[in-house]
Image (cartoon, rainbow, N blue to C red; front, side, top):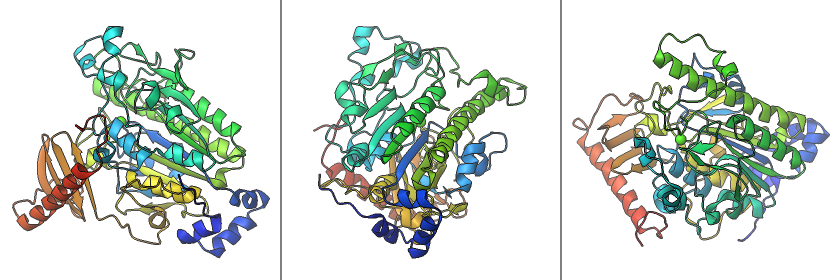
Length: 475
Ligand SMILES: [Ca+2]
């Protein structure tokens, strides 16, 4: 891969930050000056199935997320940020490849469905099952690989979800270190997925921490990694499993949260409220862990040179709060796709700002390549752009359209028009006046409908013509 390092001044110029900010960074003291000489650290935090309003800073009034709210105050909060698929695996695949699921080949889940109906796989059958053998096409170039070649220390602590055979594991995909689980969901305490152990340290399964709450473990490992690499630029990827439901055979599946966090909420009046409190308590435990990660950046005196990104991998499920959006995880209504996202980037992104520009998780890969001063992978079609100039308020988003396909469900946003054709409902909606997708205008606006459908068809064609990637596509 060709390396092309931008120096920090060129980079700042490219995102529209001029001499004044540089002077400010220098005036902040010797540590800020020293920090300006090297590429920024990256702390990328992803939550699992958190709803659009499951944070105080997005209007949640019942949930306690003080550290995430503080993170928003220190950076920019995005209100029109989308993931590429309304559930875990393809959403994460797009984040790390910078490509549509349909282009990188991971456009569905790697999972065994039968445990949902009470089936327990015997080991020999599990060994050749979908969950065990599928993975991200090894020809795909992942973000950690690009950053590692640019001199970054790279670590992932949490949910991998891009394949569990050795060739698919994080260490073979650009990460120096991995502690986490390999598939799409687990029990927060046993670290098993429907009875199958799922926690790994690097390339080997481990049960060393069985019984300890996952959020605490991912916090512990991320803290250790950042301390260890305080003097090198680091890429610390922390995909928590919270607040995803636990992968246990018992029904209804719980969201597991420590008692001390459940005790922070009022006594539930009924079962539904109890489940909502479990969900919120898992979120608050995660929020506390995020608080520890952010505090360490201060202690290490690297906060000023660390980009912190937070978002949820897809819309909320179960008792999550996706208001004011329609729908939820698994759906191509806004509630499945539009997620909370914050970016704190000291000296670049103005603190305490809100950005309503049309952006997606596809726009993270190119932004981080530029921020790190590393070249994008050569010969690879990326589907996004560097969103930094948009985050700093210098430019409007170049994104005018976005498309989603989950099995038979189709969704498109073109400008402010949103079209949905799915099992859970259909229609044409004007998001500028109808964010909740309540008023179907397809009969009233047939020309618009045709235009949006034509754009979707063109995208579908583009994806079909892309160089084929596994594991699902026939080639
Ligand atoms: Ca998820």
